Length: 99
Image (cartoon, rainbow, N blue to C red):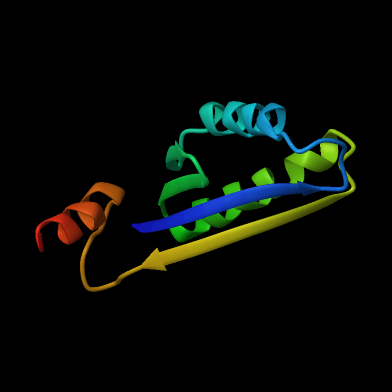
């Protein structure tokens, strides 16, 4: 199981708000069932297989182009361990256990 964080930013559109685009990304996330996700203020956390995360990241990256946006900047951070299973919750709990 891998965990990841993704941020998709449109480039070359009018205005500073991207909430309409984020709503479209959320609809795409809701429509799939292979990768668990949690949206947060600065992006979206993902949990699934590496292959499924990469496939979903490609879909999320391509979505703004369908709205006529000329450029997209996507940041994907992926974390995977082979020595133990990790989830989004277990990673947070591991840090909290040190308090």
